[in-house]
Each structure stands twice: as C-alpha cells, then as structure tokens.
Length: 352
Image 1 (cartoon, rainbow, N blue to C red):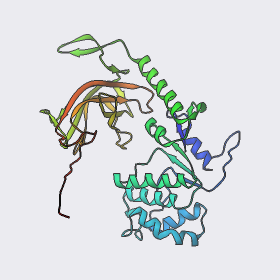
Image 2: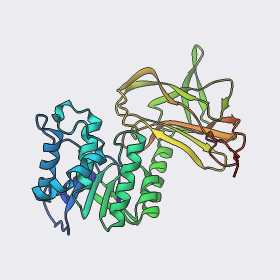
Image 3: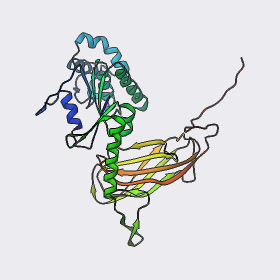
Image 4: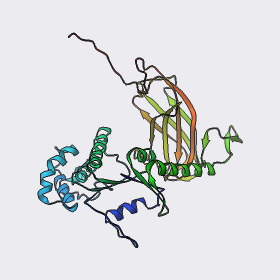
C-alpha cells in the first residue's frame, strides 16, 4: 500500500488519474500490471435515469468484467452496499450516501489488482466505514496493490508500507511510510513556526495591546478568540461533550479547516477530528463567527486531558491559529475501568 502526500496542487490527484488511464502523460511512461479499480469520485459516473442495478452492471463492464461475471456478483454487491430495497429504483432517487455505497461496492467487487483511492473513505456511517476498511484490508491481503492519496499522516503511518511526497509536481521524498510522513509533518510545522509572529496585536477592552502567544502558533489571519467546553461544571465519563470555538478574521479567508483533538498528558491521542475529514464545508470566513463540535458521549477513563484546537489553511501548509495544550480539563467517573476508555459495562454472576 502506497501513500501519496503533499499540499493541494502538488499533483496527487493528477498522478491517480494518470495511473487510472483517465489522462495521458505529456512525457515519460506509465506502466501498470493488472486490472485497475478506482475509488475517486464515488458515484460520479452514475446515470440518474438508470436503476442502481443497471448502473452497477454498467460500471462493472466499464471496469473490464463480462456481463456474466457481473450478474454472478450482483447479489454480493447489493448486499454489501445494503441497498436490497432500493437497487431497482432510479439512481436519481438515491441519496448521496447510497450512491457512494453502491459505487464503492462495485469497485471492490470487480477483483481489482490495483486500487486507486483519493482521500481515505468517508462512506456512510461509522459501521459502514469500518466495513469498507475491512474490505480494503482483505484486498490488500489478497495481493491487491493500493495507491492512496491522504492528508492524514496517522493514516499513512498506520496503513501504508511506503509513501511518496509530491511537491510542486516533483518527488520530494519516497520511502518508508513513517519516514516520509515525518518529513512532511516537519516541513508543515516549520512553515507554521516561520509564519508565527513573536507577538501579535489583539484588542483587549477598548484599546489594542501587544501580548505574547503562549502555546499558540500560526499566522493569525483567523484567530480563535474563545474556547468553551460544556458542560462547564465538569465532564463526566460517558456524558456529552461540546466544544464551541469563537473566531474572527480581519480579511476574508476561504477553505479553512477547523481541528479538535483530545490528548492525555503522556501524549496519547484520544480524539482527533477536523472539518475536512468529516466533509463539513466551512463557508468563507470574514469577521466574527463560531463553530461547534459535539459528542453524544465521551467514554474516556477518569483523568487529566488536554483539549487542542486549531484552524488551518486548506492544504495544511500552515496553521492560522493552533492552541497546543492550552486548555487542560479533567474527566470524572469511569469507575471500574483502568484503561483509556470507560464504556458502559456490567458484570453478572449466574448459576452453573
């Protein structure tokens, strides 16, 4: 499994299109060996007036299978996509999630020997995403070569054997996934630190005052002014959690990515999410605003934690404003558990 990393415009998606035969190189050669499957624009090629079954058949034939082969696999494709009750309806009646599930199911059931993935999967709910991940792991175990574009270095480290870092269309690094991901992260951090002013002018009361940043990094085109955790009276294990970020910008900024993560004092990452990963479209920021992230329940063991928040440039080149270990909090409860998680559980002793 090969991870492809780099900033927007570096050539990652172009590389996948060349590998998939959608585009042709202006120079050099592309050599592939085996049937290619692609998880790029999931469902983008479906025809609205055809049924789900007809679109699946068409997609399979385009991928290189015979009609007889697709007919033999159709029941498995439909069952995996969980669309038994809708497969013979026109695709124009499908939700976006249904289209994506069907497209994914077709792609992974056409026996690809090379699989192209543009950004890691965010198909359907968490249970379906887990099923997608298991299926990709199965393909990998069967010998399928996987090329995945990703902005998430943790995913690259966890899933990939090797990684390729593209920079302005050229190879910046190629080798072990851990090493390449580390180099890429180092450059991103260096760029953020380079752009971070030693002091910045912030308005306090009725007048401006120069204040130093403590555990904050960024260019501050967007500033996170307030960070509020709820419930304010204390967070209990298994209870809800809400994080509200108040922000402002002096000039319009498009494509910002907001980040919320929770870590333990020893550096263990417990929760790490962002608007880009969750496919939340953040409108252009101009002036004041707020954004809220909620968890129905936080099943962490009792202890001390840090809330890290930030807002980043759309390609992750640098942070606009990142608060690192600036917001400590504690979780109470979680009796009967010693580990990181404290989900609800019950012991029962019975006869026999």
